[in-house]
Image 1 (cartoon, rainbow, N blue to C red):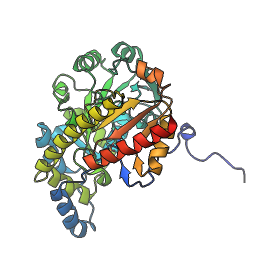
Image 2: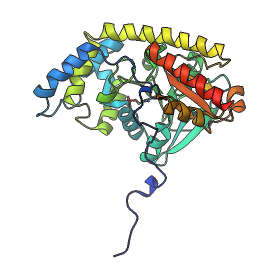
Image 3: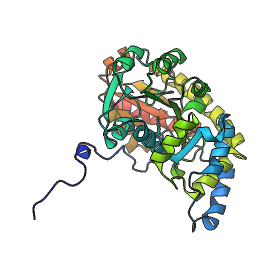
Length: 361
Ligand code: PMP
């Protein structure tokens, strides 16, 4: 028997997503909610666990769509859901483009985008961010892509893209182009571009319940777009993607849990401000953050993060980022990203950071 290649040829260069997820006493590496989840969601989850596990969940999470529609202020036929916004992004890329088409995205951005692109046979086209960390509007247009992905606030930089740039890109989208705007961190920015959907029926805004809502382990993501667009994403997504417990917990989080969520968004913003002040006292200037994390260029980020992990604090290191700004040029493309959580955790992170820096100097 001859040994053939296993799987699709286009998958040969795709490696499994592998950030360091080893458990750590203080984990500030993945921008989830350091305070946990709304108690109302935890109660709904426990109740649903015995009542809802045996039968299939609803096909397209209709009750959750209703709750999300009233949270966002749109009609339910403008909402689709998925197994995390990962699933929603993957399904939309598949729905909007044919294999061989191009997808343009700012660089750096959410690292799963080029992976979803390849999984669906698309050609990834990274377009470096501007030195202000805003999107390069001309570069995006010149990429001549079928799908344009933007992330605002952007991960990993934390800065929201300017409304002007987003409007320019959405306004210039041709008849066969689609724009996806990932608003995973919008709750921490207090701004959204969902209103632009009224002007463009090829714009999809994706959101998640993994960050402000504290439900990352339950995997609930959603998107808002024109009903005709949402219907295509649902075809590509398929049925039963939000499990029954997750749907019940998410609905509770959007109902009785909403006050808890809002209170913790405020706490996050206050601690973000406080961490930036503390970092400034150490002569570190993070990029202005509109998200639940701060990001700053720093040389030898991998080594620093590894040493912090040995002291029980996980933060996210980056190396090899494009040298789009003075800061990233000075650090040779290395940076750290620290998620915002309860202040005791951030204080531990600062202590560990001080220790490992002192050792490196
Ligand atoms: N978009 C962005 C920008 C993210 O940072 C993340 C998670 N880190 C996601 C989407 C995916 O989130 P989830 O699948 O948990 O909804």
